[in-house]
Length: 253
Image (cartoon, rainbow, N blue to C red; front, side, top):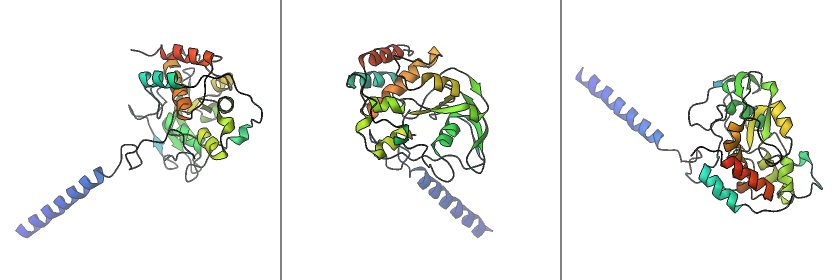
C-alpha cells in the first residue's frame, strides 16, 4: 500500500511539472515570439477562427468589438493623438487606376473560414458556425448605430479605412500583397461587423465627410481610423485631421 501511495504522488508531481511548462511557452503577442507586430505587413495576418459548429462569447478585455468597447490593436487615446500628429498631411489623391478587385478579399483564414466569417465570429456574442464556417446564429451590436442584429446576413464587414480611401491616401503605390493585407487585416482595427445600412451610408468617405450616427462611438472610431492610417503610412487631409481631433476629444478623460 505504501508503494502505491508513493507512485501516485510521483505521477501527481510529474503532472504539475508538465502543466507549469505548458503555461510558460507562449509569447506576449500571441505568436510565441514576444515581438510586436510589424507596422505595415507584407501579407495578410493569420487568424484562428473557432472550429465549425462552435460558439464563442466575448469576454471583458479580449479585444472583441461586439460590446463597442475595443478592437484588435487599437491605440489608446494618447497614443492615437501622437499617431495623428505624426501623419503626413496631403490633398486627396486621385482615383485613377482604382479597382476594388485590386484589394483581394475575403482571404482564406484556415479550414473553410474566410476573413468575413472570422470577423463575424470575433465581433458577435454566442456565434454558432456551420460546417462551412458560416454564422448561423448569434448576436451582433453595430458600433456605428447601436443596432442589435441576430441575422448575420444583415451585417456587413466594414473596412474602417475604406479601400478607396486607402488608394487615395497612399495605397495606389502598393503591390498586390500589401493591398491584400490591408483588406484582410485581423491584427489591427481595420475590420468591423456593422449593419449593412450604416456601412452603405458611410461608403468610402473619410471622417470629415461621414461620422457614425451614434456619437458615443466616435472615440473608438477615431482611434481605429488613426491606428490604421499610422500603421500603413497613409496620409490625411487637413479636414480629416481636424475631424479626427474632434473625435478623439470625445474620449473620456
